[in-house]
Length: 428
Image (cartoon, rainbow, N blue to C red; front, side, top):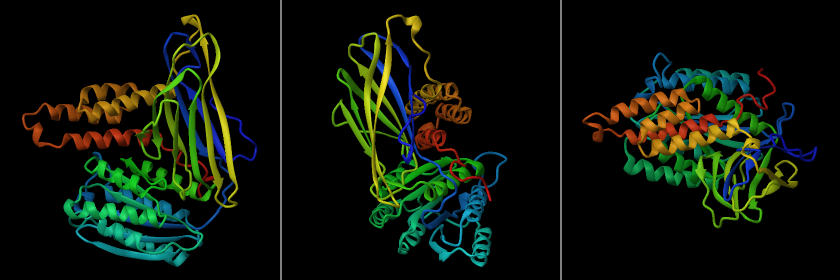
C-alpha cells in the first residue's frame, strides 16, 4: 500500500506502509500502520507572496561549531539564509532581527528587489557573535509587524542556547507564542548543536500552533534543505484546515498513535476506537506522518480491514473542501512461514521511537544500540559520549538529560523531514 490512488484532482499524495502485509493469525496480535501524507507537487507555481521573518541568535556560543571541523553555528545559519534569499521573488518580503543580550531589528519588513536583496545579504554577512541569550527580545521584533494582505507569513527562528534570564525570557516567549497564534504567523524553530532548551522551544512551537514546529539541525546542508522545503510548500499546493481521523474496525483497538510531523508527540486517545488530529486552522499542510499501533483481538486467516482513515482539508486558494476515506487492510495467514518480513521503514520508526524513550530515561547505552540498529550512527555516537559522562563522579552536576532529550527528539524530526527539494522544480 505504498501509494494510494485518490481522485486525479486530489491535492494530496498519500502512502500507507504496514508493519507486515501478511500477519500470523494469532490471538491477540499487534499491527503497525505508518501513514504519510504530502501536498501533491506541481510545476513551480506561486500561489501567494511569502512574508519571511528571520530571527537569528548572535550570542557568543554561536561562534562554536556544532561538531568538530565544521563551520561555526552562526556561519551555518548565514549560509542557509543566503540560499533562502536566492529563492525569493519581488513579490516576497523579508524581515531580519537578531538577539544576544538585547534584540535588534537589522532589516525591517522589506520587499525583495535586486537592490534590497544585496542590502539584506550584506546585513547578514556582517552578523557576528556577541554576548548573552535573550530569545524573546529578537522574537518580539518579528511578531509585531502586521502581515500583508494575502501573504503567507513564517517566522524562522535560529538558536543554539539557553536563555540567560529564564525567569523573564520564558514567560515572554509564552506570550509571544500566543501573539503569533492570534496573528496567524506560524513559527519554524531550528535548534543547532545540543545545548539549546529542546523542551522549552518545543512547547513554544506547540503553543504558537498552526503547524509551527521545532527541528534539530547539525549542518548547513540539513538546514538549507529544511528551509528550502518549507518555502516549496508555501509556494506549492496550498492546503489548509487539514485533519486526519482514524476509526478502527470491529474487534480492533488502538494501542497508540504517534505523530512524527510537524511535531513528534503521542496523541491522547479519548477512546480506543478512534483518533483525530489536525495541523491548524490557518496553516498550510506540509505533510504529516503517523505511526498507528493496533491490536486485533481474534484474527482469522484472510483479508481484513483494520483501520478506516478520513483525510479532510481545503484548497486555500479556491476554498474548495475535500474529503477522502481510505480502508487499510491486512492479510492474516494461518502458517508462520507465510508471514511477510517487517517493513524497513516501519522497523526504523519503531527503533527510533524506542531509542528516544531510552534517551529520555537516561539509558544512554541502550539508546545507542537502538540508534545503530536504526542506522543513525551520529546520534548513537553522542549517546555513547553521554553514557561515558554519566559514569563520571560529577555526573549529577551535569545536565545530561537536556542534551539527551535534545538529540533524541531532534534525531526523529530530522529523519522524517520531507525531501529538501520536493516541489522546488530545480534550483535557479
